[in-house]
Image (cartoon, helix red, strand yellow):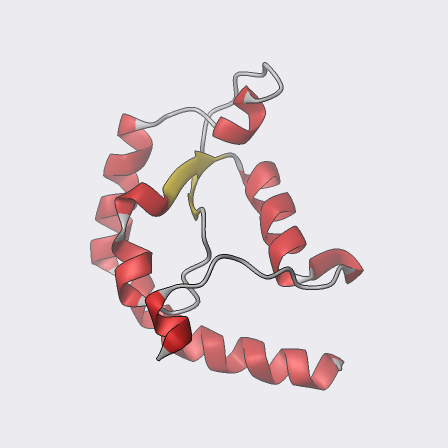
Length: 106
């Protein structure tokens, strides 16, 4: 099980790494300037600066989903890490299914 997850992560990492270049860094900076507060903390009444642009629905390498700004949300690192662990099965949790994207059907 753990070996399969490592292989899956390695394959995903290769496909996804190319998406996080300078174009992403610029778009991320603009988005965080426009949306400076963590929406996760806001649900509990806390005001925390956002430091991560999260993909609400994980893109899993889908370029259209990656660049869809309607799929972005500003989060602080702790909120992002918690969300990602819940979705990707981190901290011993099972991976959860998310909404299907066009690439899931291809």
